[in-house]
Image (cartoon, rainbow, N blue to C red):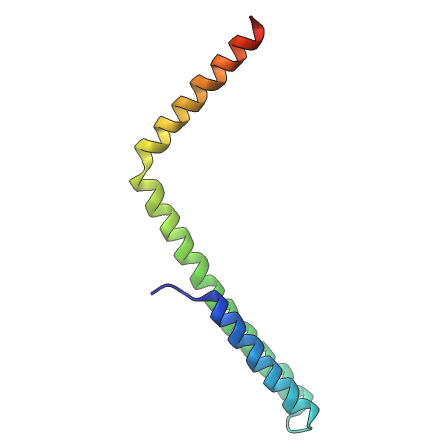
Length: 90
């Protein structure tokens, strides 16, 4: 499943706003706010790590499946660079 970092961030802000409102109304103490914010940040960090791992796995898969294409493009770029250098020196 694809991690939805955008939705996770929106959920984090919704919960943070709700916690702030509860604090402003005196329903929770400052210590409770600190503890809950730490939990929310840990949850969001976990979702960020999942999204990064998903991206890196996808990139790794793409690189392994497109290795020949990338090598070919590298060779073409090297030849074009050499050609431009020889054209400038002539």
